[in-house]
Length: 169
Image (cartoon, rainbow, N blue to C red; front, side, top):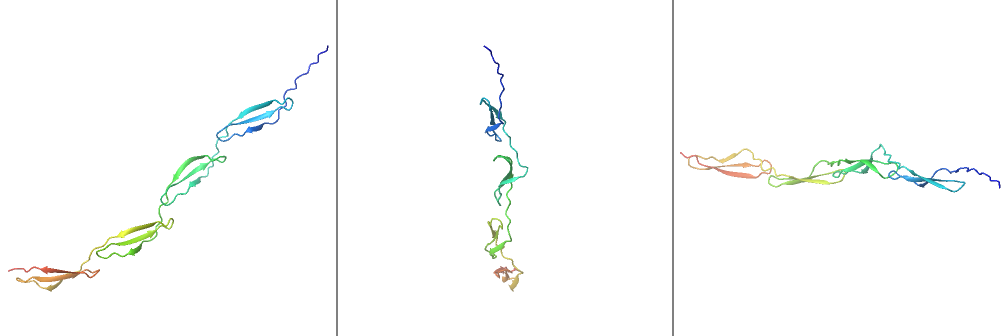
């Protein structure tokens, strides 16, 4: 009996292919198959890690009164980093418009509107009170008789009459 020695030729593996793709956070698995015997070989693939953009992305646009936010987004997945608040813009109010003009004794009202969000700001205009001019003598007081004088509000014309007491002897 003659024995023939057959030497093992070794595996002839294919190129690696992905069984499960690696993601930013999780590793994957790669495999290859021998074309001679069909043996399959597998190996882990490390997680890819995030690749964040250097450009800021506005995630929430701020309004006049509510803050917004911005962050750097991963180019491969939905992950975000450096989440930063964007301050509210503040109102951009126009000029005041008088709704009701105040009088000497009653308040008025004025408003203005934000050109961004159309919010209205309404404010009371306080009554300024009367502004009286000089006193006018109507009747001179003397030693025995009271006199009289009056003044007028220079704004609305309201008259104030006052008695001037007699001087006495």
